[in-house]
Length: 371
Ligand code: SAH
Ligand code: SF4
Image 1: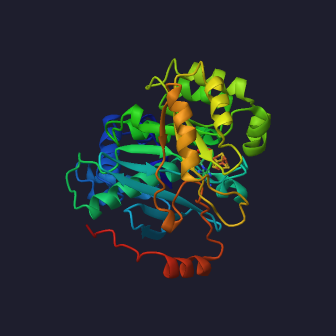
Image 2: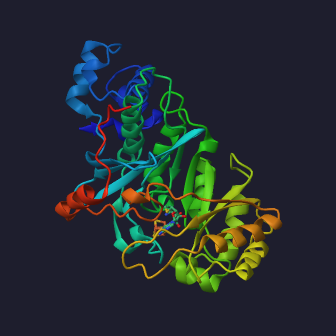
Image 3: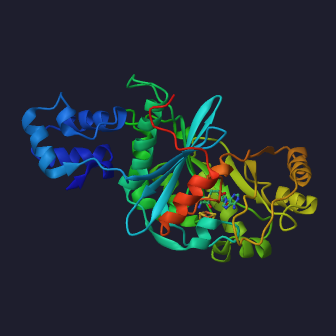
């Protein structure tokens, strides 16, 4: 069975012409699947009955099944999705006044092993398929439309997508690219390139490849102002040190839909948060048009690290801003449901443990139809 969520417009066109159909059928299918959220070919009434029957025999529309669905006191909603063999991934919706952001996972686990990240600590399981990546948006958009009582096909709840869930997206670029194209496709989600952000720990060649294949907004997880410290925090730095990474960012900006790179910087108490380190950072990024997003560290069991005090985060931000760099501090969202940055572990091996955690600590699960 061909899972049609694996196919972008070009892939779908090849698939339908392979069935002896006209290419425009691909566009109809795209709209049914992604704009309307249909999974059942029988419901796709514009398609000839014979084609619907062929599709039922040869294809399916299947996103990863939902294991749990929880909503935080602040409205952040998190789904835990089953990707088989005891692996689960997490997708988080973050509502804000002027936008709705979906945080999407790209791998089950992650091989990068950053010191401060619970996904990294869990190790690498596997790359997600295109269907598993776009399936998160497909599922979330349509579940949220239901939650908010939206029926119009062209109204969207999700305006922004960030590849900041579990995994290193650029290590799974082959599966990611068709998913990105679907996010941007007017017949699918029609998101603006500036509102789709890929976040990377710094895979230099893949940054170039993303620029060539599908430039979207770029966020780079920096976390340290020099190689000695970054080698410890982000082991990938030993392979691609900061000078190389800064050069890659500059090259990316020639293609990027935005004229800046966002640097993410997790604030770790006593590790990378001194005013002197902020000044070193200003010097490091001198030639890269950028904005900074400071992320208060979200602790997880056994991390051995602590969040910087708010006053130190403010002082750090102050140094950057005085140097003319736009700097924001990320609000921690959804930490009561372990949905905050770096808390996504997707552990389901112990499902009973998960269930009791959900029962004991979390707000009740919310039905998809609640508004
Ligand atoms: N692998 C990619 C994208 C996923 S991580 C990357 O590293 O960029 C998304 C962001 O969350 C990254 O900036 C990452 O450094 C940050 N992060 C990881 N663990 C965190 C934690 N415990 N607290 C706060 N932010 C964390
Ligand atoms: Fe992987 Fe990103 Fe976590 Fe590093 S911070 S381990 S790259 S998910």
